[in-house]
Image (cartoon, helix red, strand yellow):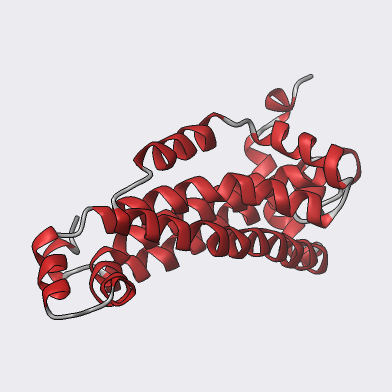
Length: 223
């Protein structure tokens, strides 16, 4: 019998019963999942955001931005984690490094196009007023392109949270430890942990969607 064959209408009922009965376990694994996901997202932001913004400001590196984006979509998540095991071994930092690799492309690409697409007239006006290149980037280009930057962070965050479930195969902890261990937690536990991952990804996407809406110019908030 396959996993798909084992699903019945009662499976979800059992999953919702599993949640209160194992609330401590789910909360603990959710905390581990959040720690792993947001550690990777934070490192990816530090690495990719300044580079993407500066390349966009200089209107250079289009090939780099597009190539990184394409590479990020093409890389299998399991392959990245497996490659990380050979370099860093099993554990938290191996999985963090692998998730950083997967989070960088949408952040870098969106940051590049957010700044690169700012109205050239606004930039030239600021330059004519004597603003330095850094001031133009921080005071003109970044505020105007911030909504697109946040959209890239939102994509990366959801991708990382979903992919972090695979970290369990390499000792990364999190909700994936329940999902891959049906023998111990049963199908109800697998479904309950999967629902927790989905809820976490949804809430993160919702929060960043609200941030994106808040920083969007009024004329494009409905887009």
